[in-house]
Structures are given as C-alpha cells and as structure tokens.
Length: 363
View (cartoon, rainbow, N blue to C red):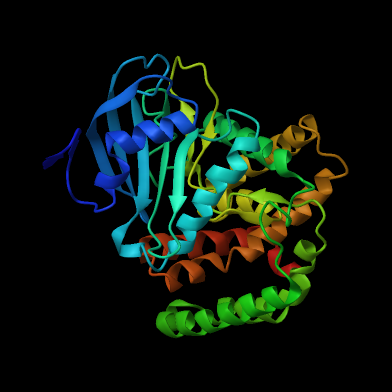
C-alpha cells in the first residue's frame, strides 16, 4: 500500500494511480456534469478484484467544497494485465460504447459512465462508472442459473436495449461498422484455422458426429451469413450477454436492471444475445423450462418499444440459427486462451441445444 498525494492505493496496477488522482477525478466529474464547485480531496481503494479479462476497483471519494449529488464512490475498470494486449480491442470497444452510444440511449439501461479513454499508442484504457454496489447485485453466483423472475427481468431489459437500436438509421454510419461479405469470408477462414487446431487438440473428445457438424457449418457459412447481410431487423448486440453481465436491483431498491461489460458489442442479429444467454450457458432442463416463455416476453417487449414487422415466427427462426452459430463460441474462446472451465462447458451445452432444437436442419 502507498499514499500518493490525496490518494491511498494498493499499487498493483500501474494505471490506477494516474486515473484515480483527485485532480483527474475532479476534472472528469466536472466534464460529466456530476460535480460543480467542489473538488475531490481524497480517494481510497474500497475493493479490487480481477474478472476473467479486466481489473475492477471500487474507489471511495471524499470532497472539499460543494459536492451535493456528486458520487461518493466510483467503479474504475482497466485491462487485466494477462489480457491487456491480446484483448486490447475489447477495451477499445467498451470505451467507445460508454462514451459514444450510452449517452444517446434511454436512461436506466446501463450504468452511467463519467469518463473513459483508450490510448491507441499504449493500448491502455479505463472507464470510470457509477458504483451500483449498494443498490444492485448479480443474479446468482456463477455458474448457477437464474430464477424465473430474475430471467424475466434480465430479458426485458435486453429487449429494451435491442429495441432502442433496432434498424437504427445510424447503424454502420456513426454507430458501429458493417461487416462486408469479404469481411465475413475472412472471418470464417480464420475460424476454420482455429477449428482445425481445436479439433486436433481434442482428438477423440470431439466426436465424428460433431466434426461433421462443424465441417458442414463452415461449408454453409456464406449462406448462413445472408441473414446478417440483409441489414434488416438488426440491432446493437451485447455480444457477451450471459446473466452475470446484468445488475438486478436489490430488495427494496426502486431501480431498473442494468447491463454492463460491453467489450464485445457489435451490429448483429439480436437473437445472438438470447442464444448465448440460454443455449450456451444453461443445461437442457433449465433452458427448456425458460426458453419459450422468455422468447415470448422478449418479442412482446420489442413490440411495446416500437419494433414493427418482426414476427414471432421470425424470432424463432433467428433464435435457432443463432444457437447454431454459437457452436463457434467455444472455439473462439479457446483461441484467446480462455480456460477450459469456460469453453468446454459451453461446448457441451450448446451442442445439446443444437440437437434439442434441430438446428442441424438449417444446414
């Protein structure tokens, strides 16, 4: 532990001392309209932890002067040292989301961001977001699936976010970028290379039946990409929408569910998020119990928030195709050194969903 100016920190992160300096935080909060005449006097690390790919620090703030309404604590998010270079694009994406997209979204969907920056030269990045620790909580401890009530609240909020960007005029212009047919071809060529190495690694742990499925999927990928390239009924997808990336209001808190961790957002078919949440993360018994009611709720919420021309049947078709697409997820995760406890279980669950939903018929 060390004291530097007005900040008390555990010096485990070289970026922490600079971003958490009282002067820096004062300027950031003023730019965000969260602090008027007062100034940050002291910063204290309340808690810090590593997630799979990032470092999270909860900062307590003390002020001098007028600070009514200013946050008493903040969440500082930076890159996990082990993934700072290999997953730098995730930091770039998340900073872009919170600084460009979040300010023009309906309120109450994501945590408020007070400051964010990605340095292209060093690839260092950070986000300073509102601290919802006292009012919100994660639904369950990973990997426990949510209750029905929790799942309904999560899917409602996801649908509201999707509806806000549904066929938005700025998609591919000032919000995100379109992937061309050449881009998608190159992406699948990269995937095919990863898959070959993945299959070699697994050996007889990857059955011949599954190998055939992967080969057919790769062969048919151009046709499967047609849904995306139609540029119709697309939205901003979260890209990593498991239930532990949602904050639910604690008992007695009068607030909404918030979505966080936007390092993989992109323009995409919306059901990719639903398929990742349910087919990739839940075992068949739980998925089968909740899948149909949640898809119904999702569609109803889209309609309530202005989406038109997207039928319930279209949602089912998109969902099944998204489940099929997610056989790629374990391979991508393996390719960036995500541990087997993640990708192996995802592989088993999504393959069970593919079989259960008859997704092979789409090939």
